[in-house]
Image 1: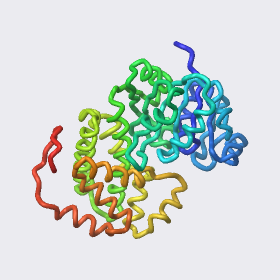
Image 2: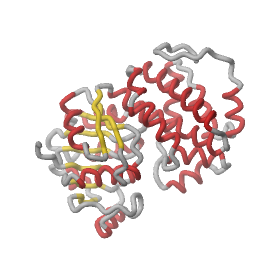
Image 3: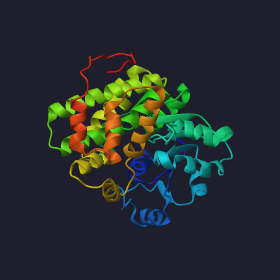
Image 4: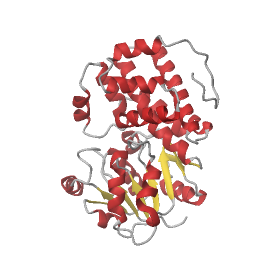
Length: 342
C-alpha cells in the first residue's frame, strides 16, 4: 500500500473535524486549521473539538493550529472544509503559503453569491499555484461519519489520477469512496440539496406527512436536474450520491442544519434567531439566493427554490408558500434532459 500523504484540513467545524478524525484513524498526519485561535487551543488542550464535535477524541496524528502557514507547510494535500462563502478568503491566505502545487480537495457544499462553484473559486484564487482539484460530496452527515456509521461519498475531478488519489486517501471500513468525472454535477448536487433541505424542514415543521415529503423531494430533484443540465452537468450524476443520495439524507435528518432552518421557520422563529442557535453556517440560506439568480439568468423555472427564497426573505410565510406551490398551473410530469417548464 502506498505511503499516505500529509494533509492539512482547513476548517475546524463539525465537517472538517470529522474528516480530520477519519484521516487520523488511518494514521495520516493531519494539521487541522481553525480560524479561531481559542478553538484551536481548546482542541489541543482537550484532544477533541468541544464546540463543534464534542465527545470524539482526535488521534495523536491530528495537530490543531490557528496558523494557516503552519497548517499548509509541507502538506501534500489541502482539504478545504470551510463554508462556501469563506472559501475565497481562505484560499487567498493559502496562496501566500504555497511554494509548490498541492492536491486540492474541496469539501464545501455551497455557491458564492454569483453562482460560482467551490472548484471555480479555488482555480480563480490560486491561479498558477493551483494543483489538481478534487471535489468531495455525498450523504455525509458529520456526526454519523464520526461515529463510524457506514457512509459513502463521491470524489470528482477532471484528472482521473487525482480522483483516485483522493479515493485512496479517504477510503476506510466505514467510509466508501467512489470516483466521478462530472465536477459540475457533483458540486451542484451538494449545493442544491441544501436549498431543498430547508423546504423539507418546513414541511416537517408544518406537521405534514410522508406524502408531502415524497412529493417535495421528487419535484425538487427535477429542479436540480434542470438547472444542473443547463450548467453543463450530466443528468445521471444527480441520480448518484451527490444528488439523490445527499438530498435524501439532508432532507430527512434532524442532524442537518439546513433542515433545522426550515423546521424553525415553520415554527415561526425569525431566521436570524435560528442561525444564531445553529452556531455554524447553514449553506442552504445563501445558496438559495444564488441558485434563484442563476435560474433567472438562464431562464430555468425553479418554483420550489424560488418559493423557499420568498420564505427566507420574509415575503411569504410557510403556510402561504405551500399553498402557492400546490395551486400552481397544472403541469405534465417529465423525467429527462428537457429544459421546458415542469
